Image 1 (tube, rainbow, N blue to C red):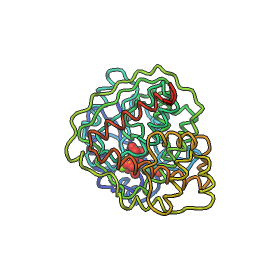
Image 2: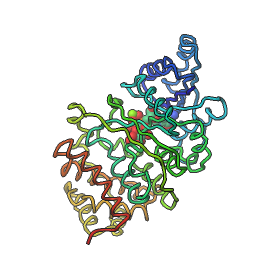
Image 3: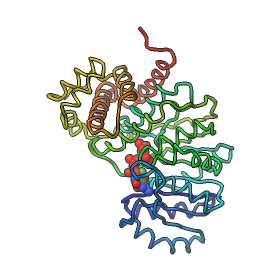
Image 4: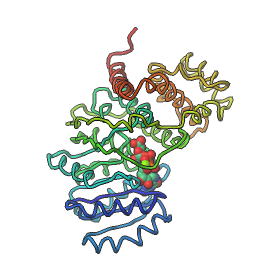
Length: 384
Ligand code: GDX
Ligand code: MG
């Protein structure tokens, strides 16, 4: 039987409690665990409502605060790792599910599909779902790009949503992840990268299941809101760059379904507000750091201080930029943080205007091919 976990921080308690009820009503679920970042309003309301929900369903509902397990900013990583620790030390459940607390399209189907895939013997089940062509820009430009450039022979570049927070682990998989010190230290947004990395590094079998309904949840405006996530996800990848990953993971991906028109037309971020970000927070030191980058990138970025420029940041320029960042980026240095952010903004804007504008089908095809070309580049080298 299974444990369902919702990590949460400042969420709408109504959404979280509805999701808790959905999970409790599922026949495969024995217990629900909500792991809060702090004693915020959501924590108070969820704790107050838990005993009644538990009674109603005849199952356990625990609401706990996350422990300090890692070494970086205390964030979602401490929350998820606290749940692994709880599973292993306090319970006998055979499986653990994670779902973001803010999903408004959550249903029993999320749990059922994961359980059925695990019944086939997979140690990890990951949910994936349609996303708009301008959404998931950290996933595509940071994580999948990095996985392709660093571990081209492994399953890593081919994981559809390597930052997805919806997944199932068998108890055995949870043990493997939690015993990995690289996973435990990652207390911040880098946790999703570390879980994905670690499951492939440990050779666990993975089934990616497709959720038609998609994940409707809280949305961001300008890309600034994603800044911390971007930095922490890149830093996590950079920290892993020398690590060995075996090639032979069993990895199956459920074939996706047709994508609704609404999703195809959705715009993932506010273009105009994002354009401004290219001109913000420059310093002399950042200009000096640009000397480490290829000329095209350096000149393009310097010009972008005056007037929005980004067309120079094409796929190849981004690969070259990425390799420089892997070498030199320092997440403790505010100038590096600002520079990475603006370089990524330039890449996202270039992709948006050169590819996403040509329509959803073109854009998604482009992104998948881009990853394949990065894998090829890492294995075979750059074409002359
Ligand atoms: N316990 C705990 N502690 N929970 C947290 C914390 C924290 O410090 N920070 C966030 N959460 C919860 C949050 O309440 C939600 O349930 C979940 O973690 C995800 O956070 P949200 O703000 O909804 O992030 P978003 O942008 O929806 O990100 C998700 O998708 C990203 C992606 O796929 O790109 C999330 O799973 C990210 O980890 C992932 O990178
Ligand atoms: Mg969310």
